[in-house]
Amino acid sequence: MQSTADAFEDLRKDFPVLNRRVRDNKKLVYFDNAATTQKPNQVIDAISDYYQNYNSNIHRAVHALAEESTEAFENTRDIVAKFLNVEDSREIIFVRGTTEGINLVAYAWGRDNVKEGDIIVTTEYEHHSNIVPWQLLTQEKKAQLKYIDIDDNGELMLDQLDDYLSTGKVKLVTFSHMSNVLGTISPVEEIVSKCKNAGVKVLIDAAQSVPHMKVNLNEIGCDFFVFSGHKMLGPTGVGVLWAKKEVLEKMSPFLGGGDMIREVHKYETTWNDLPYKFEAGTPNIADVIGFAKAIEYLEKIGMDNIRNHELELTKYALEEMKKIPGLTLYGTKEPEKRGGVISFNFNSVHPHDVGTIIDKDGVAIRSGHHCAQVLMEKLNVAATNRASFYIYNTKEEIDVLIAALQNVAKVFKL
Amino acid sequence: MSGDPIYTEMIIEYSRNPSNFGKIADAHIHQHDANPLCGDTIDLYLNIEDNKISEVKFDGHGCAICMACCSVLTEMIKGKNLDDVKKFDKDELLSELGLQHLVKTSPVRIKCALLSLKSLKFGIYSYFVDKMKDSESAGNLNEEAANLY
Image (cartoon, each protein chain N blue to C red):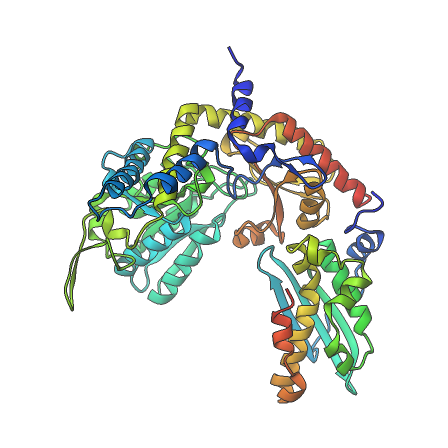
């Protein structure tokens, strides 16, 4: 029987891009998975199959192609629902990505439910997509935006949440399931239970969690849940918003147009049923169909196995990186409390310079503020380097990263 | 690592010891700019006397390329006639540091290199338009700045 590490290494053959060479014929070491993941042949082929064999708009025409495309599209909705343990697939709304999902909630739910003086609570480690929509909403409504700060370990200071909730003014608590910079996994159960006790709605930005761990929406108990397909082997331009049917039914629509209507008259319109009420216009059919293959691929490996594989890599990388003099690691020291995301700085070398120098050795990491400038301010840095892992990464690749980092020291004569 | 096309001795040296680093209180021109892609920020300060750049400083956070280019730019324009500085173009700056190749090889890092020049052009434009009410002298420096990269 194959060892687990070998089984994961075996997956690499499904990802054509991992075979390519970059720069001076260096093997690609792809550690920018928190930004987007690579795609396996199964996903690429499904998209190509759609365009070659049954490209057609969905939900309307009665011809053969339209029936096939509608079935494949709607089949993805069922696959997503099953993947998240959602009983009613009408609660799965397809959007462009996490950003659009959050904006949909801020616009369609927020504008009806948030009033002057109300409070929206977010956290210091949010991506800009979970800050800016709420700034826009609270500014428009003269409501307040409050932050749960993080402690020195990169974890949320939940007593602040208690303080906010005790005001009785909080309408929504919105937070990322896993920080895209620190990798911290938020204490979801605790936050949701506090909010439920206070009768406050909860939105979870799951862009960094769903790709890497088992999620059971039936147990979590939040009200809104959003994530992107492209961070989990799927194509870009596909994301999911989940919300309870009762909440979605009461919400105003987001975009108006085709497919989201029941009847349109000159001066009034009635809305289509869920989920179509929130899916105006021709959706991203090909990529939604491709996304189904990504989920099937992940389920075949098993989400718990994926989590364990990444934990192994993260532990190994943290151990090796600690040995490099002048390297500062951000986030919790306990690997079990974090996902496969490691942010670091190297002496005083700017992350862009680190990124450019190790890129010559074929190592792709992210350098910058990671769309988390509020967190950068907290950490008192302009930017960090970030290495993030996925199913196809190996310990040997981490060794390449470590060697490349030692090269940075040479270039900068440290 | 001799022969590195970007991280030359000169760039590393400037990144460690930038020239003209600091602030000028109540400067005639103060231009702040940021690279939205990476969060780098610079503040450029200039004083003008007799149509000349009498004093120039910059501060901010940036990578080695950004810091080196800010340093060289400020060195090159100090004491120069404002009319000449207005004509200053990116090739002059890049060639001073041997970075002309960035235009082709690294469309991402060229932004780090030219943030300094972009701030300079916007700064002079605003100076003429807002402070001197002289849009003729400002010319189309704002467009030049916007189209640098």
